[in-house]
Image 1 (cartoon, rainbow, N blue to C red):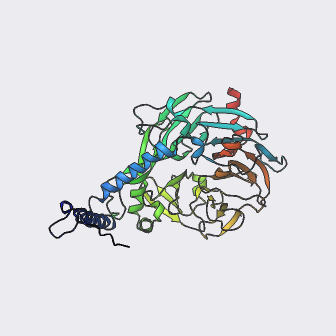
Image 2: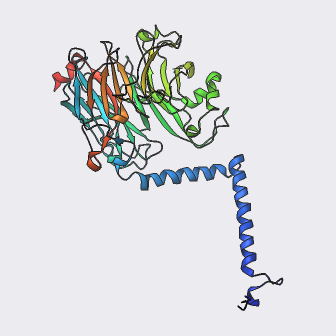
Length: 452
């Protein structure tokens, strides 16, 4: 066969006979390589304009989540796959359970529900965030109401309610705090980015966590990359006025024993170095059995580093802290005996689920009680969740990812169980998370019921 010879039109050749496009391609490849290496150097060495690139990337990622990933509330982490078909109360051992009313909040609504031991809804508080938002809010453009829910609630004996708003698909996700009367009328509102937890001291002062984006470097912690989420403890007067705001990040940087944990951050926590998720003011009767603190000290939980700390609001310094055999915990409670009860989200490595509830002695670090589920009744919630020690010695547990509330004895027997009755998705396969839960004795709410 004759050999076909390909020739190139001289118009497409340079002076050496090479095609013009080949030289141009080589130029593009070389330029791209140099740009790549320069970009790699900027990122690896954190050189300018790395912060601008990083901020733009984070902002774009957050916007993409809002536009594409969070249109349907059922697809957010406010809902989970339903593990069981059961709804409402599934177990009620009247002889062993602590009788009363249960308050809980759910990921499907900006609402709080009070149910009796049979699961009958006795009262509901409900106010969408759009009804309380105004231009003074730290949230300039709130998420749609179906993506905003009550993260937690605090109930007063007369039926007034403090409610925390959080939003899915936003960073930061704290949306604010309101005080409602028993008929869901707004008494006052605090529209900073309040999140996770709210507690009330015996003097009526309100303790709440807030957060916001920080862009300026912190003195003494230049290794922390900006921007990041900075957490604050805010103390409000009973009528919702700010009395004090403390940067928890700056307090940690000032505390040599604790600042080193900011140098050992896991990758997922680089831009959320503390992730404060619980606040509890210590009263005199509790602090007397807690050897590391005085009345007025505040117990805090940092999820990112699995730290529990005690903060003196007067000096704004940490006075105590500990880590233990728990991971990414929530809701440390100081018990009358001086022990601490907490929800260990990811510390159980056994076959019955990832989560457990632990009681431990902060002086000896000895675990004095735990509940971690069974093979038949697995126990697992990667995020959120809390617990409450009841007067009869039982423990009331909120298993958020399971959409489940239950009461368990010291021996591990479940004597009351409630499954969130709300469902959505294909074949009702999705259940709203249960965010916060608390049991009240009837006498604690008699003023509320008398006023109805």
